[in-house]
Length: 270
Image 1 (spheres, rainbow, N blue to C red):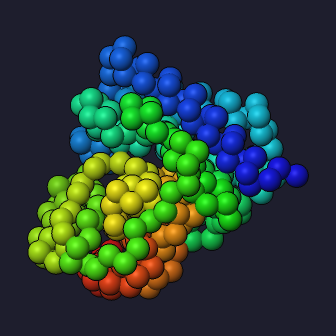
Image 2 (image 1 turned 60 degrees about the vertical axis):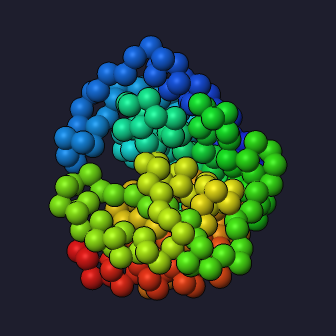
């Protein structure tokens, strides 16, 4: 039976290979292949090629495992494990040449549904920064092999908080009303544009907290585990599992202040 630590090493190895491939494709020149939920929600050819590389590699290494990817959808699992993949998280950053994008790979036990799965291992690789974040359940979180931990003892008024916005213009306008209220209650707010890196930033103490609505499973599968293993509390509506309705991540003491502040805004939002 493969241990969680071994699964982490598989995730890390595949993510690094895929990140190097995506970086070379970026240097070759970006080609938009399609748009998804809106004209601003783009897919590059590199997204599709990178996911195919990941899928093929994992199929060769772990043929009985399932697969859930942003671009190519799912594949059934015979082992009870599923790999949840975002081939390029932060595609708009990737397209514009902003060095804040990453390959995110996690492996989960159970159905590939955030409300019920158990994340076992994950890796997030930003090749431009030369950074690999990784974790496995019960094993702590690492950045380039060194242990990382969330910031503790931070009051909400001194917290640097990350967030993100939806692709639909009306959704963004609505989300901006919460930011307008919250920005005077915290140290400041950051919008980096890649959920996996936001969660890893919480894990590494680069952000004190993070919240966002509208995340897909592949957006947070690896990053949420890394944040949790670094000491963060990660939850959604009613402090249940994070899902598309809401994800909040912070050290437990800050979480107790941040979550009640943002959760009511999203609780009744269909």
